[in-house]
Length: 335
Image: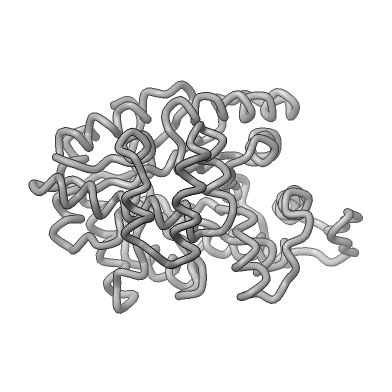
């Protein structure tokens, strides 16, 4: 392995922030480079990562992801700078458009012009990072004349973008410091990498300077069939139930009929049929589930893709503490 591993903490698996912080500490002990977690309708990740930062020593911290539909661009910049200070300069700011369901049904904001909103958010965060008066006259945001009233570090928190589609990935390459893709096959990720490189070229940047960390859901077990079926269920759920974007991306990677079957089953909330509609080649294409040796080999395939900087390891719904420990110990062998 020539690249490090990150770990995505499944916050919903824990009953307390103490449990989340303990999982992050275990990741640190096993040699993972960074730890991250997503924010939907549970605990907010700002408070959560402040706790994690206090209880870890050196592991990097990233949020997956904060959305401009839930926080204004200037608040996102304030948050990033404060978290960077609180965690000893270990923080990376993860941004993304999230989904129509979260924006509209949780934040009460129309999901309009997502890419333009994301682009302007990055511009404004950068402006705050530069210090001085922040004025911005965009299509979505208009700001006038106030300043961030703390000193800004020489190296403020990098900005990572979670994106799937070609235009969004091009935007990440052009304006962000990193890209966090997920639910891509190796072939699909290689193809989308062309969009990232094009964006970097448009921004007069070197693609090698971007931190590309694909998220791969992993379940290593001495009961490989159980690991595969739990992972199959989760991947099918993400495709069918998690808004339009995951399914669209999978369809564009050559699985349009599969996505259609899974979404039809979701209409009836038929989870078993959703899982059975996910073929083995797609399961093995986007996830790593099976014996410890099989999981390690699959992760290595993603690690060996050109311009991949790290592989972000995600757990699978249904894994218990022992399953997670087994998976981390297996992957520790290739760190």
